[in-house]
Image 1 (cartoon, one colour):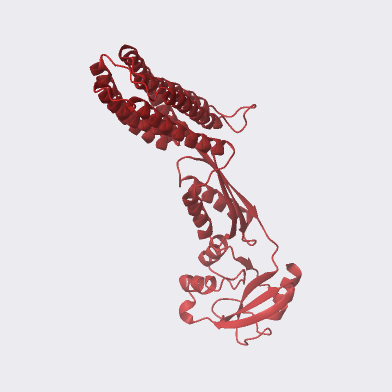
Image 2 (cartoon, helix red, strand yellow):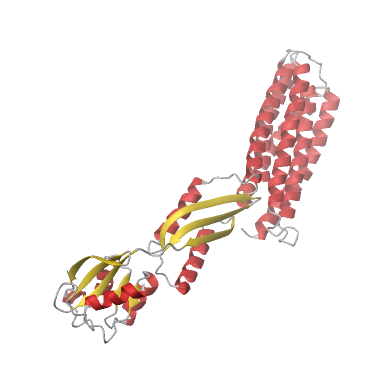
Length: 402
């Protein structure tokens, strides 16, 4: 995610806070001139939202600051902390409104200037609907918890506005209990939303976060590199403000070269970061386990056992002898004939990679076959020494060498 998106989020938060401040003032005036408790409650709700969105603005602005000697991991969690404060504010607001609504539930004050209150409420509802959509869209774009929390809060204001309209109509007709009951319902909705947002932001501050879909995609990408990655042990993800940080712990092919490993891991990290624009950093930790069992492919001429003579080149190779070395001992072996049609770049490559070998004794391989087996499939190419004539001799040498 780029800095431009965060700046857009800041701009929206700043503009929204200004508009809501105006609406809150108008609602407060409507509450004063009508004398209706429910309109006062709605005005307080709007003014509290101003503070919440302003907190989002501050959080987004500070989260863009780069790491320094005091905050070496950056300021990203400030945005999450802002979301936490916003959520606590919503909980407190819900509690205060609920307390007052319960006390006044049976009171029915005669309202005045009710057309002014109706007009203000309808305009506020339209604004809340539009603002909720804008905040939600920007929250998803920036991955901002506080903006998404405020989007949910504005959505709740639609229900609050509807309740205010019902209360005004009831006030017109002197129907008791409606205004107080609506105020209680609005308070409970706000309280529920606040508690849900508080739980979510608190869990993120404590590094509790789970995105099973993203985790599955990352594991799938790692396992796709089956020639390099032997096993995916663990994938961990965490939220820090608008950003996602992650790490994977994998077992890698012990026959992979250092240069190959470095290049492929860099490509893997780039691919994983491209899966989600909010991933700020992803680290891959590798473990190379001890090798106690390897499969070796040796080109042979005629005989088909451990005393077979090693073929010096592809032309005189009639078969490959596959031998397992297990715990420094020669294990099972088998022979597979090499057809003439397989003595080309594509045929030989498919023939050898299909067997899942770890080590291949060279028989003057072409450069393309050599590099594909070595660089792509991480198969070790063992030299064919002039003084080594038989399979048994080269196996004895490998037992010493490995």
